[in-house]
View (cartoon, helix red, strand yellow):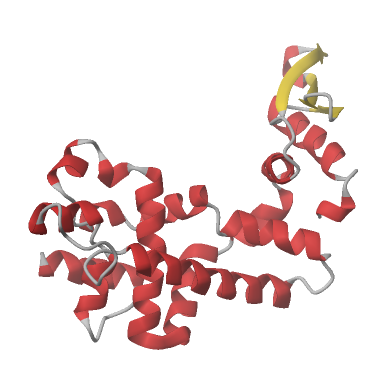
Length: 233
């Protein structure tokens, strides 16, 4: 297993001085339960649940500082939206998969057999625990370097132009029905088709927009709704 952990440390760009931090970040409670039995104490140094809590806070701080520094003219609402995307479970899951983090987890047999190594919540939680482990081992500078390089990367520009995801985030925050997209018209010859897409969020609001593809029309329709709510941006 040590050789595998060496591979992971090379991938994340941090060599642990205290390997116990790394091992704990990768240890799911099911592994502790299997090794120690049903009386195994939860969150007393064996598994990664407390590290998830700390990692969430460290991640939030690094991301908040980055969006605050790099987008000085954005409203509070838009800064919040950027942060929400960057710390979302789905995004963390994608990063964990790129790092193949699931291959390094210590799981109990039940979790192993039920596909725990590929489970979204488990991988996102493990990534947060890993961030905490890096912080405890190398300080905020090491944790910030990892978050900036692996979690944030070049995604900020993508976040600002992905209006469908922005609208989905707004809908969840406002407790609206989730957006539903439908093609309401297609005109023009096959080589120069124009699509009209409608997005509807229950009775809350709707909008239509045109585009040269269904994808671009959907983005334009989502933007039309997002632009109505500047306080959310």
